[in-house]
Amino acid sequence: MGRPKSSAPAGSKRRVRPALSPEARENQLISLAVDLAEKQLMEGTASSQVITHYLKLGTQKERIEREILEKQKDLITAKTEALQSQKRVEELYANALSAMKSYQGIEVPLDDEDL
Image (cartoon, rainbow, N blue to C red):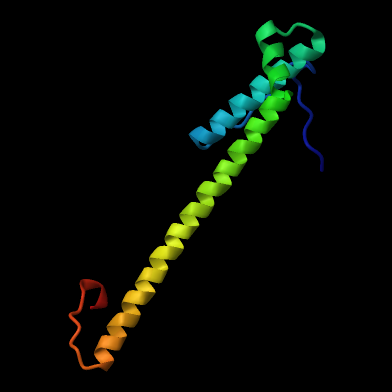
């Protein structure tokens, strides 16, 4: 059984399901704005600001800037992972030292974490 046919005229606007989060709503609005800009560019009615915006997106400088931002993002991710790894290594060293002290008969005070 097929979908019921709409009685709305072909040129009417479609209804968009409401967004469930602010981020989703923002993405919907961005999508609508890009669609409108595309329509204006196709029809030749786009403002100079819209044309300039999309011309700048296509420049070599813009591509390089995007690539730099991606590399910076990767660098930040790598630094975060390195810091987390370093923290784990420090915890392992502390546990190993504590175990060695207990093997030597030195009493090791218990932390709240060890309880």
